[in-house]
Image (cartoon, rainbow, N blue to C red; front, top):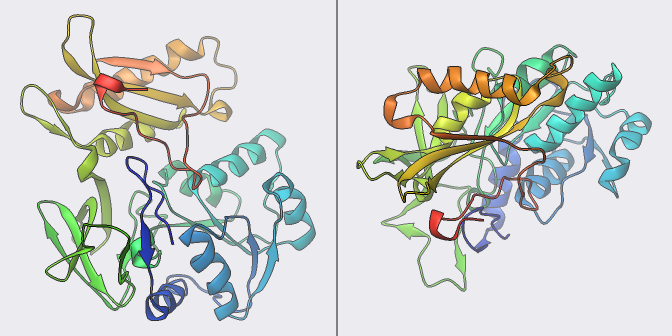
Amino acid sequence: MFTGGTTGKSKGALLSNEAVMQGVVNGCYGYKNVFGMRYLLVLPLSHVFGLIRNLLTSLYTGSDLFICRNNKDMFRDVAVFRPTILVLVPALAEMALMLSKKFGKNMLGDSMQYIICGAAAVAPYIVTEYQKYGITVFPGYGLTESANLVSGNPESLSHPDSVGYLYPNQEYQIVGGELWLKGLNMLTSYVGEDVPAYDDGWFKTGDLVRFDDNGLMYITGRTKEIIVLSNGENISPAEVEARFDELKCISASQVFEDVTETGEHILALEVVPRATELAGVADVNSYIIAELQKVNAALSSYQRVQRMTVRDSDFARTPSMKIVRYKKCQDKI
């Protein structure tokens, strides 16, 4: 399976049958009514989330599977098939939620019980808003290299910003804030790469994490995305973005290093508004900037952004719907 990184080229991960099988079994943890569900397949099978968590876990649990041939027909297929569970990336979950609010109707149908959501950060807004429709969203965390599933959050209503508990048959350690893994679900090697996948038996995920006292895991950033400012402070964009994403009026954000006209390196922020939460607002741009300023003022001084932009379109995204990160400031897109 090929990775879908947002900052570098894709790499081919060689997954054994054992690793894939452990990923399939991991898809059975954390929620009730595992067997005999009705799945709708909307994610591409070239993506590890669609192949393992959607297709293979549905087959393993004796569930029915309806294949959506074209995502444009997703809601028509929902009405016909009446799925009870969906495996979605956050961007698709957000789209379905926005349409439900717009038309005053649950676009995912009255039979829908669960949404398994991952492959990118899941905003707590998605978790709390879907609950109003009687749908429980379970955020999770995984990698192509881990046969998709590393952790899942069965306590999303009380901890919507967590990616949950680590699944069994894995070992982990945290080195410099980075999550290192080994286990039955891990890749054998990269294909055609000079760099080995393991360091003394450990796979370095590149993800920065923390655990709370209950063992729930939280993603705080990526090692490759750390911004080092001229004052020596290290900034994790994802950690700062998470604070702005708590605003209901924001559907997506990106923090990046920018350069002023005088050559000063600063933190900048771009956001995508959430239209369903801005109905009746006369001056949307001014309202959003004011809300962003409130969050910004509550951040540590070294985390505060100095330039804010409200976008009128979404960010560029990868095939797996992750936001494409801006390049370094000297050749930033």
